[in-house]
Amino acid sequence: MATCEKSKICKTCNKTEGQPNGHKWVDADCENPKTCSVCKKTEGDAKGHDWKKADCENPKTCKTCGKVEGKANGHKCQDATCDTPQTCKNCKKTKVNR
Image (cartoon, rainbow, N blue to C red):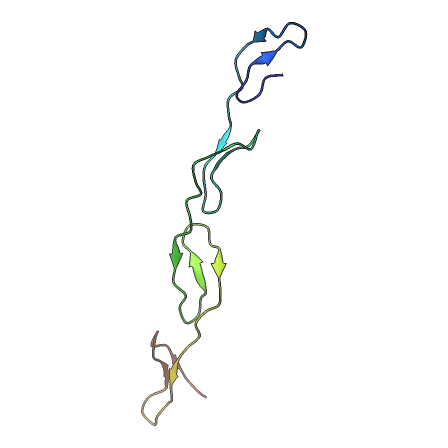
């Protein structure tokens, strides 16, 4: 039987026949290098994550694959006054108490 890299070989006389099947490559992604789906051979490196920093409401998130790591930073709010609602120092979102 032929493989990705070797032609079919006769078990009796060792004569080769035909061509290798060739690899069926799956492109590299954030965590995995380019990989043959048949024989699992790899080539190159994984691309690595393209992280968007965590913010008040969202954890650190890969812009490419959506993987998340850690936790959201949470809001850092200034206290409300008579004139202004409670407001996050980082994202400027306000909280209205009713």
